[in-house]
Amino acid sequence: MQSAVTSLDPTTPSGSAIAAAAKEKLMALVFDTLTRLDDAGRAVPAVALSWQSDPSSKRWEFRVRSNVKFQDGTPMTQEAIAQSLAANPSWRASAAGYGVVIETDTPAPDLPLLLAEARYAIIRRGSDGAPIGSGPFRITEWQPGRRAVFAANEENWEGRPFLDSIEVQMGRSPSDQLIDFEVGKADLVEIAPDQARRAAERGARVWTSAPMELLALVFTPGWPAVEDARVREALARSVDRGALTNFLLQKQGEPAGGLLPQWLSGYEFLFSTAADSGRARQLWPQISPVPPPLVLGYDASDALEQAVAGRIAVNARDAGIVVSTQAVTTPAQSMDARLVRLRIALPEPRAALTALLNELAASLDAASAAPLPNRATPEEVYARERAVVDSFRVVPLVHLPEAYGLSPQMKDWMPRPWGAWRLADVWLDRPGGETR
Image 1: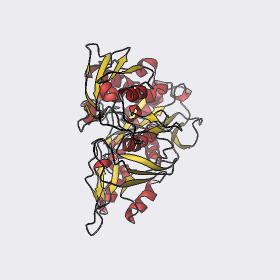
Image 2: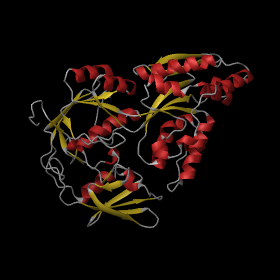
Image 3: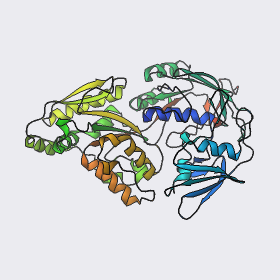
Image 4: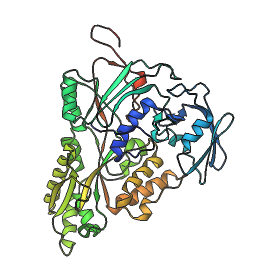
């Protein structure tokens, strides 16, 4: 993988949403959660067998399994679960005879869904303070940000996984991963969306998820040149999302008019994705004084962002707007706007939009960034998303899938549609038929 994961501790911040997604994939190998998500994105039993809430959705009772052990052989008791979940300051978790009770100050109708997230993994602390899990694999070697080795947990409550071990190399660029893949040094590699089609045409076995990442243009709040809404709108309308998707991404993605992809929200088609350079050319002469050339930043280590930034600059020039691109190497760099990549956190519209708004809060006004009501209706979710898009402070560009190259030996690769791994179900068949 490209991300350099430095810690699997659920309480340690992960940095960007992309880095957090990589960490979550590895955490799922080691830790269990009370619930998990099925292919439809619904909460289903994991360590918890069942659950129920009071009418206010402020008090939840979870009945838990009695046969779960941590990887050091310690039984997972109700008290241990409550202690682990108590790390969330907005919850009051306590042990009960049948499991655990979680109480909240405000209604939490989505609590079973949230508890499937890796950050709510159930852990106990060893004598050295390191987290110990109960998942299908245990850590046998950990070189932060570089290499990790996981061995099968023989006493996993769901049964021993098929694989004896998994070795993960971190910090590997997409090009290096492809080389490893082509020479048979890796069974599973990440493939950049713009390379997925070419890899498949060369005979590689490629799997892609539903679009689970948003590539967007975000304007810097308070920056004088872009405080005029007409500047933001003109640049936004000049962008040709169709060209970004069809040519740069080789059709491995979807033009984004809204923050959430169509498969998740069901209403993304209501947001326009068409370029309107005519409107952009009308707006620009109205702005006085004429802004200096706009500076658009992109991640210096991301070839896709660099290519997209270059295409946006070309689209802007066609509309009479001068945009220069600049590689971002430090957070303190000054620029009018920059490209960001945001992962969709949960396959549920309200929760997913809430997470995106949290990521974008620094670029939005207080009303747009405010948390959505716990019982927000689909109409309320749409209205909030519409308000954010219509402000032109965040300009959705493309919804991207995750893509992976799979070796011919890999069998039963059945991740969730949004990309969550299920490596406990995978097995490898060596050439000649010897299973490993």
